[in-house]
Image (cartoon, rainbow, N blue to C red; front, side, top):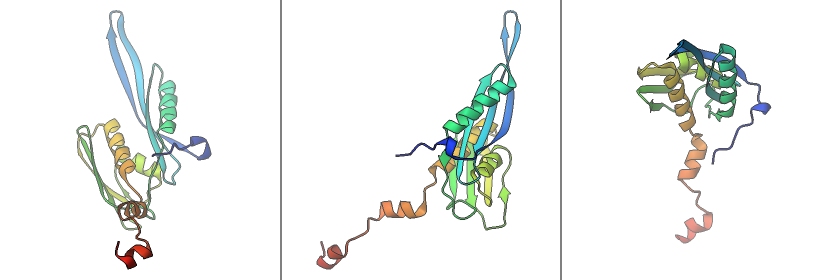
Length: 171
């Protein structure tokens, strides 16, 4: 149903959203590693997020970037905004995305702003409820954008077009 998007055909820009230093206590002391959250998008309706873990920061970022390119989705846009309001819950995070009039700008913060900007949405109102964990907020925003459907395609799916003969004959 969902076709894979080839990242080599797009001019993608990566944005590092968050780096977390993780410490594991071992018998010989503490062992450090890093996790990174990266958002990638072309600013024209394609966006993806990825997380990566490694012992060094650059390794974590490159893994997260590769994961983001694998998880690209196409976001239906209505001009410079989204077609309709979306509410999504992911874990303890709730995200509300609302279309906005042209010229409003991006009313969002943190991970939501990074994902929305990478997708190429210029006007949107957002509200974050519940947990503000940056990774879960980014995943909730992606889930909301993934669930958006093109209004014309959705109407065509719901109401099959009647043929002229069927209307005349009454079948």
